[in-house]
Amino acid sequence: MIDVLVVGGGPTGLMLACELRLHGVEVVVLERLTAPTGESRGQGLHARSVEVMDQRGLLERFRAVSPEYRVGGLFGGVMKDWPEGMDTAHPYGLATPQPVTERLLAERAAELGVELRRGREVVGLAQDEEGVEVELADGSRLRARWLVGCDGGRSTVRRLAGVAFPGEAATVETLVGQLSAAEDPERIAEVVERVRRTQVRFGLQPEGDGQYRVVVPADGVSEDRTAPTLDDFRQQLRAVAGTDFGVHSPRWLSRFGNATRQAEQYRVGRVLLAGDAAHIHPPTGGQGLNLGVQDAFNLGWKLAAEVNGWAPPGLLDTYHAERHPVGAAVLDNTRAQSIMIGTDPGPTALRHLFTRLMDFPEVNRHITGIITALDIRYDFGDGPDQLGRHQRDIPLTTGRLYAHLHTARGLLLDRTGHLSAAPWSDRVDQLTDPCPDLPAPAVLLRPDGHVAWLGGDQHTLTAALTRWFGTPRPHQP
Image (cartoon, rainbow, N blue to C red; front, side, top):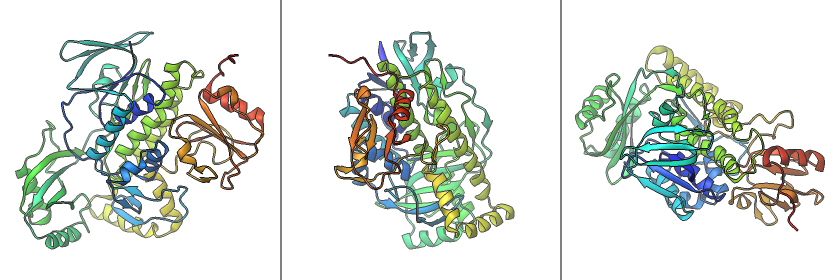
């Protein structure tokens, strides 16, 4: 029996597979497509996702192929400078197209021993107390102890598991694609700058080699979800911008809507959901890919703990408890942004007001924290403000904090020299360091880098270790 089947080989599924393999879990990824599409819906990594990649030793791979950007706010078409005082050592995003993110994560998954099976479509699912059996389109069957649906907004796993997906259907759609343009680049930039003063759902972003990422409002909402044609793009560009820029030779063409839905449960028995299978929303703010990768980052170590037999009671249920509210908050902020990017006088006035409000540093910090996920604080109960938040990277005498998180284990960082996590040494590392930037005498980090405990006494530390890392294994003489 396979330990975990991951259905869907996009960024969320691949990230989850990597996290599980770091704990020695056997993982098979089933991907319906026989090859990557090359479509780039997600355009980059926000600051918290940059931290995630650094915590797993992947950041330099991304930096080698991704320009940095430093935009604050990025809300409803409003962009400001990156604000001072954000709680991160990585005050930037990375402009990484989704196909590049998938390639880098697939390479890492292969290094870790993940088996990626392409051209495998799941058509049936049944679960019992011991595991999950899936039926594939070719008639074959596979059985696993756990299954995670990372198979997108029209998730087959979600449907087969009977999970409700309430929300709002799309009311508008946008065409997006990568095309060449015959028009002079300076003329294109001039027209784009003029049109975007009133139409935020429009743009031609240079991609190199004469190619552009073209975004333009569609003519209504498609009933059959078929891909748009080159003529559709030309027609809509002329309608919105007065010119089609001589677009030609498309590499890919697609469409997206503003539907907003969220799964009622992220877990049903031995079936879990992550990424777009758990939530869909408009792409305003560029949060979708990041939200899915961070779902995987939260879930991976918890599911591995279940597989490996040391998970404390209820640990896996904290995945839904922590990530469902995060997903709901993203849905809410994209609903607000969808209103702001409208072209009617009301949305236009709201956008102008918001632009002025964003000039206040505290507003810019607040909005930037929302979009980049740096503001997330999981509810771990009463305690200091840092409890439940991500721990930023800090310098240590032995290098950097994040360099000690590459193995996805817990970490006790202690500057007192008097505390111990030794009974949990099979799942928690301990580092004594007189680091002045630590927010307390000692900090216990979960494998996802969130602060599980901070203080200075062994009694409360032991309680936190037991809560998050279970009962220590008996001492072996």
